[in-house]
Length: 162
Length: 104
Image 1 (spheres, chains in turn brown, yellow):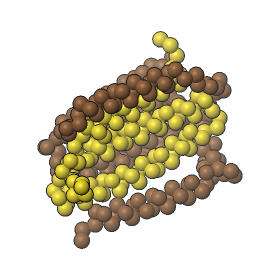
Image 2: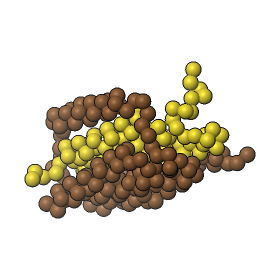
Image 3: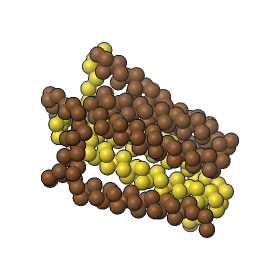
Image 4: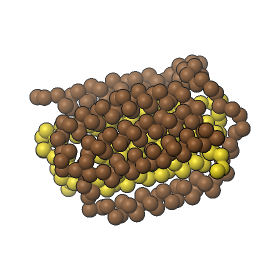
C-alpha cells in the first residue's frame, strides 16, 4: 500500500517536472525542474527495489549531469531569452501525442510474462557479479570506460580556448 | 486503488518519453533539447528497470543495461554541452534553427 502511494506521488512529481522542463520560459528554472525530475526517477527506482541504481541516479544525474547543464546555461547567458518553440510546435505536439497513444495502447494490451518471484533485495553485490564476474559484461564495462575517457577528452578539446 | 504493477511503470515511462520527444522536436534552445533528451533516456531506464523487476526479478540484466545507458548518457551530455558552448563562442547563438551552416 505504501508502495502504491509512493509510486503515484513520484510519478506525478516526475511527469509534472518533465512538463515544466518543456513548458517553462526560463531556461534556468527548467534546469532546476529537470533536477526534480531526476530525483523522482531515483525514487521510482527505489519502489522497483533497484537500490544501487537509485544511488547511481542521484550521484550521476542529480550530482553530475545537472551541474553540467546549469553550468552550460550560465555560460551561454541566454537565460533572459527564454526557451521559445520553433515552427514545428503543433506537428511536434501531434507526433508526441500520437506516439504516446500508440505506445500506451501496445504496452497495456501486451500480455507480459510477469514473474511472481520476489526481487533481489540488496542488488549491489549481484550487480557487481553481473558486471565483473564470470560470464558477465566485463567487455562492455571496459568499452564503457574507454567511451568515458574519450568523451572527457573530447569535451576538454571542444571547450578549450585557442 | 489497484496494486501498482508492470503496466503502471511502462505507462509512466511512455508518458515521460513522449514529453521528452515533444521537447526535442519543438524547442529552439539547444540546451533545452539536451535536457529533453535526458528525460527520454530516463524514461527508457524506467522501462528497463521495471522489466527487470517484474519479468526477471533475479536476473538483473535490465538493471545492467540501465547502468550502461546512464554511462552513455553522461558521455553524451558532456560532449553535447561542450559542442553547444563551442558553437556559442563562435556564433553567439544556441538556437537550433540558426545553427544552419551545414544546411544545404
